Length: 581
Ligand code: AMP
Image (tube, rainbow, N blue to C red; front, side, top):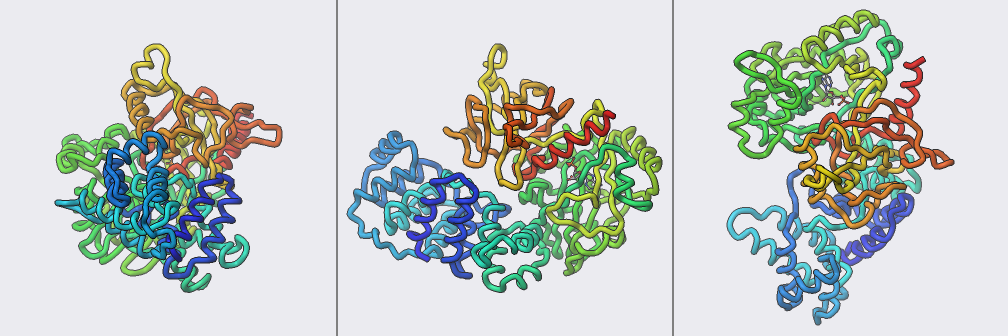
């Protein structure tokens, strides 16, 4: 496929935010694509040249892109900048100048693969001469494409493509492209949950069909979408779901880490599948020295502790380790222990389909009970709710967050929430059975003291999985420290957009809309009905809202699609009334 043809699809995709239309356009695009290019196209429509967990960012600053445009069309950089100020978008600027230029690129035959390779090169340049190399490579491809292609090509390195296509939309479109309907979506999603790599999944699907997807297994180095826990309003309810014999482990309040080990090579991934290997040298070393296996993928919760008193530290301390600078120094000051709670892959074999109790045995064979860095999470077998409450109270008195209850015969469910894991958490007033993870959608400017911070309130929402959209659920202005208000202000600077983002559904208008990126954990007294918010909105326009919401903490280990879903809000709303009766 030529890049020019792909750019025509970019145009159509940009013109709509309706999910069904997006799926229709994408499925037509995919139908025209062959197996050698489908993977690249899947990355490119999300403005990338690699799966999102690879740190390969095309990233160029405005000034660099302006230089490339100037060079491609033989004009002064000043002229580019002036036009950019007028048009407000670098892509439009490139397109306008391409129209005026005498280049013969209008019938450009440059292929998607060629453009992809150039963009990948731009992403990979490093060291001396990086800026110049990036500028000249971008200029060279801009010169060879038509004005519409130039528009999108200039926006990709800046991250300003405005297509708003979520992964679920791509997966639906892949199925429709090959079968005419969505019936293969679950199979595509399974393969995606195991590898987190849409390009790889699409290529496998186009090369080997549904059979090929069925054979996709975990791959060391590609993060697995984590299994998630359900909640129940009481221990009795949990026991009903789990039967007369089940496991319980402490619920540690740190951050989730997936360890991928292959010989002496170790990679770490966060809860939101970011590669965090460089941030935690102590965990990497611990994995190399203490894990007794050739290769494995295991999961655990990392907690900071005070080596002098051997006490585990609260989340606020642990989270100080999640930074990108002074890494070694912080590792000495606040060493981490990883409490391993599951193993998904061992010595060359994907073991996610084995029952929990067998995986646990294998975990015990590779993780020491008392390692310096790697330790196995305590496990107790439970039979009834009084066993649960006893262990729960013990865990709470040790400053832990609560318990995780686990079904003994359940496989590991990558990317899925289910009653195979039930979280049982301490909750401040006992009204809601859990906190809500919200996504930050906008900010309101501050009044009074808060004018100093710029931001006075936040608009937050939850994820509507069926629609692949974000629906609003609350305004939030309580529970934030001065420092946190300043942090939100900083975020607002980075994420602000001049219009409501394509995937947001809202009846309220904040002062500034933000790209849905940041997740925060919110505690509320109750979930109530509300005509103002779109979460779970019924045919009469009544949705749900949080009553007396306050911030618990920022969850920068989560992707926006990992926040609480509308379906969960509906369930939690029901559960709170059951509990009150
Ligand atoms: P929540 O973030 O409240 O939905 O709870 C799920 C999270 O608890 C997981 O993503 C893990 O990071 C964390 N966790 C802590 N201890 C455990 C455990 N023993 N088993 C599984 N997850 C745990």
